Image (cartoon, helix red, strand yellow):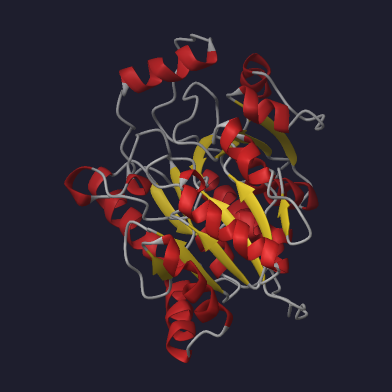
Length: 359
């Protein structure tokens, strides 16, 4: 059977999540299309020929919708699969000290989790809600990171700087941090490679871009893995790029991370950045062990085959007996918001998980 997949995104940063899946789908001989809710994602997909608008996506009648967004058009056919647009970054807890990563928005039939620390929580919620299942697959975005390769040592350490977009959490807004990085780059102590979140204001991006020189390069890209591989360690705030980078078993220095973690070198004052960089360059055995322990919980897959596991889990779920699953809640308000965002208002909705008998 030639299964039809739809990769459903909003922002440009989701394209590297979908592309390993697209490659695997095509390798298995199935059909795949893309859809983006927002202009940022549409612009990022402009070079692809297999992109649909919402009416075309409905007509396409996908069997499986792979979703890197918080919700999805419920009126599309097919099982709705949450593949996540980031790792569980623990940026800040929400209500009742819970994290938004685990919020159930009542759109999905299957959650493809990244590792044990997310699988356990979603499995508990699956029992609580009763209308979805969970499969631990690993995360497609990091497939190109593996197998891990040894980095050739450079004359000076290479530091990748990454930042989130929230003004409260982002190091990119901090003038003292800017001044320290400027001094370290001009002195030739470190070689910096920087990326900033696409949602950050243009003036903030331009400010950092103006540091460009022999030892500082600004990259306007969402394809971070080549930069991960070139860096000796990372300097970041609370961005979920930390979790992606640390899978290489490399060290990370954070600036005012909202939670103290034993696998990070966190600093709360810019004056301490230099000392933290020195520790990152020569990490202790305990720090490296803490990183190993964290990875075991986060994403214990080093084979680069997470995309294959996602595709196979989806197909298995598509054909599985779902008689034990409850219908998804009516969810009228959220469904209306999806329609309003898309400018498309069909009455059709699918509250039961899509099913096809195995050929």
